[in-house]
Length: 543
Image (cartoon, rainbow, N blue to C red; front, side):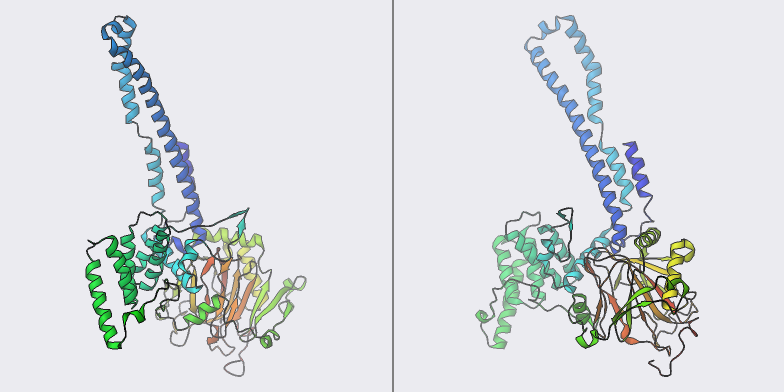
């Protein structure tokens, strides 16, 4: 057990300082928890084995004494007439029973409890669980997946690993917990979807700890909040049928029935006209609107729908070899460049990073990963935002020759100096990781966004894809309907500003939620200062 504790402490040394409520935002860091859980399982099995050995020893002792006492109690005087039996009785009661008592009092759980205590500080907390649950709902909305798709593990893009699909199922209790979380957040839309799935699985015969009455209670009230009185009444009647003494059901039923009767009188309709026997589906109720005006366009692009890559536009896209205006480092091995979009011009560079470089960058970044931030447009201060779910790290050229080489390569390819660029940012997206539509450059109403840097606005973005993503994770541009999909080792590049220095508002873009897989990217934000002769001003505002 001591050896195991030493191994545990060694394992823990790979963790960075725990940051609560942010574990779910990075798949890369969540992998550490997989190994932690494996070590805990090993410790648990050691505890079980120790308990079994202890019980086996006690059982053996009990069986031996059972036979002995059966013989001794049948003729106590005759048994003790033998001097050895008398001696052994004295010995057993004076010594051996005390040893047995010590054995019984031994607690093999001490080692397991110690390991749990050491690991617990790195466990996800309630906010992590809530964040992961909300991420599933975000994926559900973005990719139009019903609750059963998640419950049965029917997600697109899952690949086969050595003949075994990494599948996962949600139980009735899991679905109930998802629905309850949404309910407690006053998110009745998702509460209905998940409570309905819990009820469907329970009605099909699946066992659960959650009582059916609890599911019906949450579901009926959530349906009522969605404005569906007939269905709320039908569900509440089911609740009353299985639990007539339920403290809320009877009152709710009478209230719902009165409200429905009033509505029907006002409309001059009968209740039979409103009866809807269809089960609740993803499109039964309208999803509430939120703060993002282009939500529907953005999510459609994430699904690969609404991409405006017409035949005419495709005919204007080409591929070429890029030597960086005869840059010596690119003459012998020019970059392969492909047009992704014509206007604004977005290009993809192939073989921008090697597998070895990618692994080194991930190795350097992983210990530094922290919840990704955005720059507050008013104060210029970096802050955490719910619309950006990932972890990021910033790497300097001095950190490793690979980083210096990558920075130099970006300068060679783009022809722009990186001396005034921001550090290389590495990001890993967690469960449902995303970055909702945003601009990389600062707008006129936020003049102080990059004031502390003293290098002007972000003139261009260079984005490296460091992993393939099995499903989701596209970079989309809602303004002009483009979707760019991650391809490991490639990079995309676009200008955020016109040559005049005015912002190109068409470049508002988003990182779609990752549905299946782990998405790693790194990016370089290139600033205006130092580009005066590398990218001279144009003659008009929009050149």
